[in-house]
Length: 158
Image (cartoon, rainbow, N blue to C red; front, side, top):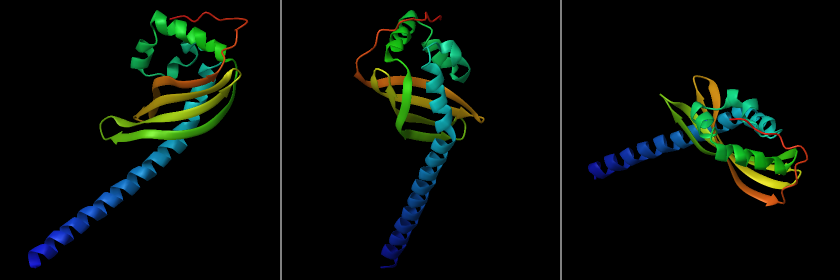
């Protein structure tokens, strides 16, 4: 009976630790969202002006800079001009928040936006190392609408 009691006390202790970790991580992800949501929104707002990565390159990670330097990506960025002007932001949620002692914090923001041509859903990855935030990925998940003909298409440079 004493062994069963000790086992149950051990499980109870583990359960309390698990609850503490869940509450701690939920609080950390809320703090991350509160602190880096404006950074992420401003990045998308600035980038969507003309889809020229030079306008936001200072906020991009080295790997994202390298990944966006190909001609295929430049052509895609040029096509994004057909979205027109960014009108508003909708719901913004945080996904996949992780924190590491050696590599800092990272999360994916899911951002709903309204452009002139329609509604777009984005996934933007943000990484923070030594208090320096960088965009590590941007993905257009869904677009509902019809691209508009850009009157003055600006050539983007690699």
